[in-house]
Image (cartoon, rainbow, N blue to C red; front, side):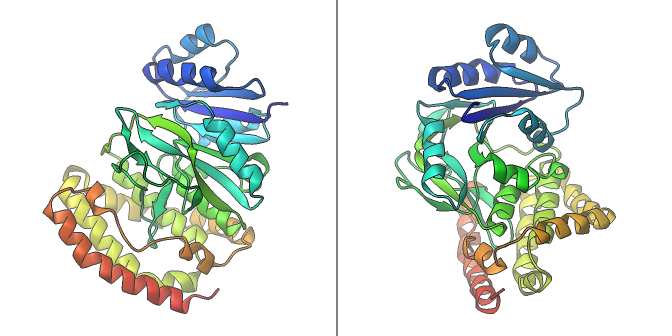
Length: 347
C-alpha cells in the first residue's frame, strides 16, 4: 500500500504536465502513487501521460466537473494513508512530499500541511506560504511577492494552499472531502476551516518547496465564484450569534469587495449580484450543508477566529497609492471590529 497518493486534477494542461510530472518522478519515492484526474481535456493530455508515464493512474471525466469534484473522485481511487493534492502548473523540489508527511506525523493534531510555494517565473520570490484568512472570510496569499527566505520556520497557518498540500486520508474522508458546490476557488480555505472546526489545525512547512506558475488573473467568473464561495463558507462554518457580531466587519468587507470590483473588474460587476442571488436561490441547500458542518464541529468559533486576521494585503491588488491609503484607513477599522468580536465571542 502506498504511503501517499499524489492527486493532480487536469484540464487542458498538457504544457504544464510536461514540467510537473518529470519533476514528480525525479523526486517521488517508490511508496507513493500518482493519480491524474482529467476533467474532459480537449488537448492530448491523457494520451501524453499514458504514453510518457504509464505508471500514472489516469481517471477521466466526461465533463469538466471542477477542481473540488475532481479531487474527490480521484480520492476514491487513492490507496495512500496521506492524500497529496498538487496543481498541474507546479514543479516540485526533492523532499517536498516527505517534509509535509513528516510534519503531520510529528503532530497528531495537524490535519493538513502546505508547502512553501515560490513563483515559477521568479523563484527568488514567494507565491504563498499558506493562505491568510481575514475575519470576514476574504483569503489571500501569505507573503506574495516577498523574498524567498521569508517565513523560515514551520508554523500554524489559517489555511493551506490548494496548489500543494497534504491531508490525512481519514480526515479527508470524515470531512466529506472538498465541497463540490464550490467548483472553483476557496475550496482549500473551506476545507481548512472545516478541519479546524473538527479539532485539527493547518501547518506550513518551509522545507517543502514547490514552484507555481502563478499570475493574478481575473477571468469572467472569478468574482462570482470567490464571493459566492466566501458567503457559503461563512454560512456553513460560523454560528448565527457569531455572524451577527461580525456583521459590521462583514458589511465593511462588502465595501472593500465592491470597490475592488468597480476598480479592477468592472466589466463583470454583475457577478457580485449573481453571488447574492445564488445564495438566496439555494438557501435550502446552504442550510443543509450548514447542518452537516455544525454536526461535525468539536471546536469553538473563537478558536477559528483567533487564527484569522484583520489586515488585508491591499498591495496584492493595488501597488499604488490607493492600496496604501486603503490600508491606512481600513485596517484600523477592521482591527477594532475584530478585537471587539473576539471580546464578545466565547463560544
